[in-house]
Image (tube, rainbow, N blue to C red):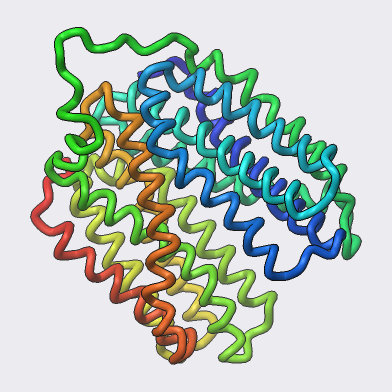
Amino acid sequence: MPSGARLGALLASSLVVQAVVFLARPASTYAAIAVDVPAAALGAIGAAFAVAPLLLAVPLGSVADRIGEGALQLVGGLVLVGACLVLVLAPAGPATLVGGNALLGAGQLACVIGQQTHVAHQFEASRLDAAFGYYTFAASLGQALGPLLIAAVGGTALAPDTDRILVVAALLALPLVLLAPVLGLRRRPRRTDGADGGGGLRGLLRLPGLTRALTTSAVVIAAIDLTLVYLPALGAERGLGAGTVGAMLTVRAVFSMLSRVGLGRLTGRFGRGPVLLTSIVASAGGLALLAVPLPVPVMFVVLAVVGLGLGVGQPLTMSWLTRRAPAEQRAQAVTLRLAGNRVGQVVVPSVLGAAAVGGASVALLAVALLLAAMLPVLRGQDLD
């Protein structure tokens, strides 16, 4: 169990890194619009943020296992500061925006690997669910605070002052550098007994239950993304205003956050496996119900249930993977999960794209069926 200072530093770091990214990424989009970047290039700018982590995830996992999680966050914090300054100081244009977003993605990845590896090493097994629950709660809070800062710093104008926003983002990233020593900068001792955790990444993937944990994590993350995409489309199909849809998305996000606060007590009482299975059933059932025309108040209730279900999946797959991986390979397990999530965010929407032809209701039903397909995968697994 880490000290109070380390726990505080971990939660603060989790909040800050997400707030920085959710502040800087929209600002870079506004900056692209200001210099008349073509709409087609906006996709490349967004992809740069995702592609860099996908390429770097596995190598950074090995680095984290060697140098320690605090040192990796130190590097990640410096990269985030540098990314914001590049976007401010370099000549405006597509190349700057692509490079700056790639650096944002790399910096966020390094910080997140460091933070999640810190949880994996510092908390005993019985406390992992609670620890990852609080960690992801702090991350969700940062994701909510970042966009709020856009209005606070950039004003309410149609074209906000992006340079000011990005400078604030750079300053906001500085605490990540200052908090890194609290997480610990010591190198992790290398194994000298010839054990390597079972053969590197291949050995990890052969561990019982690990590929199932990776698959479940990727599907849950993809379901969250697809809900964000198709719920506004569903609202448009049913004549719901943007304010109503926004409130629905907020309800989903808030209940996802709330589900993580008492997660440790919940799994302590009922067990990790039953809680994860129940969360999948709840989220799949809720999304399937949304495919049916419902009164608006009922839709809010259903989305609260969906939020609770999807909110539980992320921290529980983190703790599941952590318990499966050898201590000296936990950072690699963390990065495998992150890389798998990125692949899922690309592959799953592509596979389900055909369902969207039938409208948002059919697409959400397809997402529900995909989640339900995880039930046989999870049944009979020893998650505890």
